[in-house]
Image (cartoon, rainbow, N blue to C red):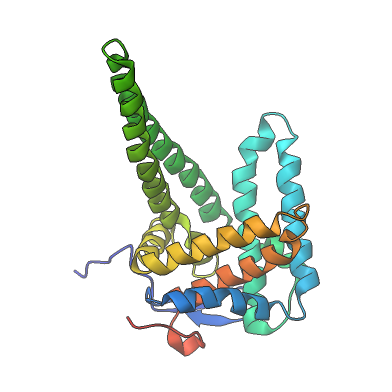
Length: 270
């Protein structure tokens, strides 16, 4: 009996219900830092002729997200699930642009009718995993803080030194844990929405893809954070220009890392 690895991306053609494009999942492929930074330029090129539709879709996502926060109790509970479905729609929107050369605002809501169950399950698992990671890190911090407090009765200076050591250890640990958790979900939405994968397989492939490209992902993430910080300075108006580019770059990264070279994406050495 052949044993199937649930974390292996399928080597199959994937065609969306609308038939706007076919691609073949493969890899994960390894990319260079230069290729990762090139996602930004490719994301911008994708937007040519589609700026209005993409900006409108992103603004609507922001309005819906903010509106949900105004609904007592139910709004914040529903937000992660609705946001995940909308993100899936954005992926579908860029997929249509890349494969069919046209944009359809209605794709934003594709997640509410396609792959809805797995996407909602993804949102639920994501909440659980992040809460679990937060509890683990918080528990470690509480234990360390308790140890430092016990030093107070002996020597206040020793307590101050202990607090400094604790922060020096816990901050990098916090960053490492939540980066690894993020890797589980980074490519999960397009793998589920476009690739038709199940939750476990999508999370496994996403994690392997990010770990295989650890340095490019870190450098790209730092550059993106700097860009967002600069774009947010002029009353957040710069984000109207930057966020569509980042959304396009995300789709480009998925195609480059997790689809076969025959689909037209350039890949680095394996």
